[in-house]
Image: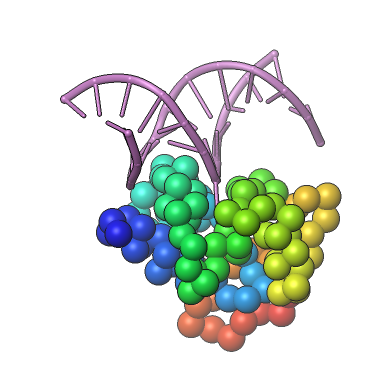
Length: 107
DNA sequence: ACTATGACTCCCA
DNA sequence: GTGGGAGCCATAG
């Protein structure tokens, strides 16, 4: 596994249940601010349950793709409490990295 | 080394 | 809101 993939997975693992992050935000977080597409490639290869790749969405807040289907991705997110309207996740569900060391803000 | 591909994004009409 | 086009960068072949 490449070091790029490791970085993507490590950051993705830190997204809490009930929150989402964007491909672009992850790319930026790992020091590749233009690498959103590469992040998608890396996540697309993951099949491990340890990496909650269903919590990664597009910048426009539409859900995006998923190895087991978009339907499944939406279903899991809803189960986790993420509100989805007209195919887009609620802004309030966006994970903000700067809150990492604080208590989870109310959604 | 080079080309093609894609779980993306931005910009403009 | 929508659709097309270009730019982007890690991978695969």
